[in-house]
Length: 478
Image 1 (tube, one colour):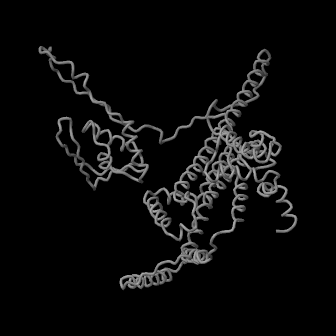
Image 2: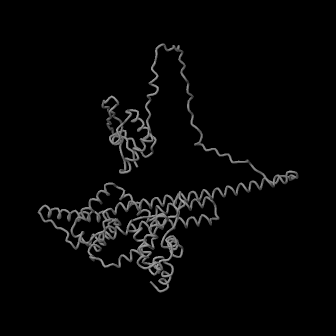
């Protein structure tokens, strides 16, 4: 926090520039209402211009037309300029309309302004308990002595048994109102902070991708070294501390059991009179769904960056191949130029025009020839009339629909068995459809067939009879 560093931050940091901007109340009030309050991301220019025009119209009626003379589009372009850095302007795939999103610096400035409001309740107990819990987790997670860990678990077991004994004796201790308010405020601040962390994490991924593109554009070494560097950098995103933390958070939150537990606990907490006295934000009731939406948007951004980088590398390869073709054409032109006066002696030697590569594992294995068995039989001419309607009543199994059934079932769970699929989607074509499910399991590398365990399936045929099939347990995994 020395003078030179603070002076540099005042001149270059977007958050500081936003706080001292001439129209800071206009910028912050509009962007906070459009993005943070609605938990919106990547709004199109058309939608954002319409909302800003309405916002400016309301302000001009109070402060006059001269207060904000520029158009909504001009304001948005100015806020997204390099000298401002309050909005990120980009073009999503398959569209030519620009979109806007908040930058992490803008979110930081807004969070700081929100903290300037006087809070209805100031608590410190929950923060102290959080510090102790985190220290306990870190010390226990890094303890190498197994006996020390067992001793700690025995101590916790003793405390739990004492608490259970008090409950059996009728001594029920409830959390007082101040402790409940303290913990609720900390929970709310942490929950809202997670949404800001998602936007900052996505911004870091975009910056990382931009720096990687710059390295590819200025690369002068071998192509193999370039590809090794690129793939190593892409693995760094998922293998970094931030990437591993995000993946653990996403796996934890994607569990349907965890989602139901969060919903149930939020409903119970919001029903407490002490919490209602704080006038909590009703959006906190569905904050875990906002986490899911923000996390999914971050994952889509990482996947889109990887796809764009792959196309960028493909373009580089195409340019290099074009350069090679130009060199070959130059060699041909020089050869034609000296065709009438060829060299008198050899000037170049080639062992072979192309290398001959033969890999042992690419040789096919021996397979005995098929010997057909010829049967001498007399073909008799049919004498009776056979109805031709049977040719038009063949059963068709739509395997695409069966794959869709499996995919829909795996959206809410990690795995699903074939018996569960048949119960949720009864067989329409009997045994033929069951065989099609088995074919899908054989083609899917994530599916598993447990020969030691059997499962029983039931369905009703076209005549109304109940059919039963016993086969090995088949599981489809996400």
